[in-house]
Every structure is written in C-alpha cells, then in structure tokens.
Image 1 (cartoon, rainbow, N blue to C red):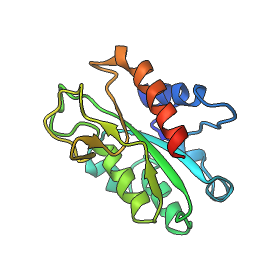
Image 2 (tube, helix red, strand yellow):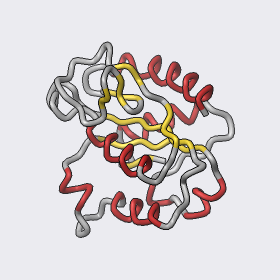
Image 3 (cartoon, rainbow, N blue to C red):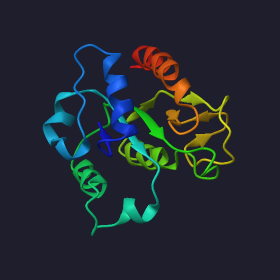
Image 4 (cartoon, rainbow, N blue to C red):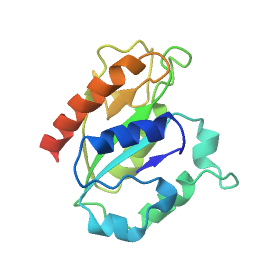
Length: 164
C-alpha cells in the first residue's frame, strides 16, 4: 500500500512488489477493510510531506481517511513493513519523516513492525523515522541516491521476508 500515486513512491512500491510473487500493490485510496482482514502482513510506503498535509481534513490527500479506517480495524496480529522516500540533501533535518507517522499509527494499533534499516550510507542530519542507528523501515532517496534503490529494495525485501 502506498501514496502518492504517479511518482517515485509508486515506482518504488511496484519495485518492491516485483520482488514478491502473488503480492497486490495498491494505492491507499483503494484499500478496503477486507484488505486488512484478509492479510496478516502489509508493506506501506509514503513520501515525506509536511504535517499540515497529514493532519488536514480539507485537502484531497487520502491519508486522513486511511488513518480513520485503521481506527476500526484490529491490527494486533498483523506484521507491517514500512518504506519512505525523502530528499536527504534538500531536507536533511526531515529525511523520511513521513515514515515515522506510519510507524506511530501502526505501533499504537499493536502491529508488529518489521524491516528496520541501518542509517549507514545516508547523509541526513535528523529524521523522526530514526531510532538509534536504524530507520523504522527502508529509507529511499530517488533524488540523490537513485542508483542505490534497486539494491536496497532487493536486500530489504529479503530481510522482511525472513522477518514476516
């Protein structure tokens, strides 16, 4: 599951999906309650955007509706892997912060979060998605490290397959 559509997040979501067999890749505005009930493992991805977008009820962004949908869903027996995209050079103090919002939403619902990723090899200053020497999921930078995306995705998918 991912958002937004039509850009690097979707491209990376499809790249991750291609590493699996029999994996449905869909934007969050097409996710239904039965998707959560029918599956025990999820991969979610996002870009880093400002809190005004995450928290707004008046924009066209589907994240607020998606989070409301989670309120009525039991996720305690579910495993979740996260990936996030950001620009570590232009926004070095907010690199992949959006992934932290996803982490918080699923952690408070009791989901098992898998797929922590080392911060080695990145050039950011801060990230809300960083805990110690790890991100809470896979961090990708298509603006400055696009040449590393395919290998990072392949390695991460191997890791989360084992953790799932």
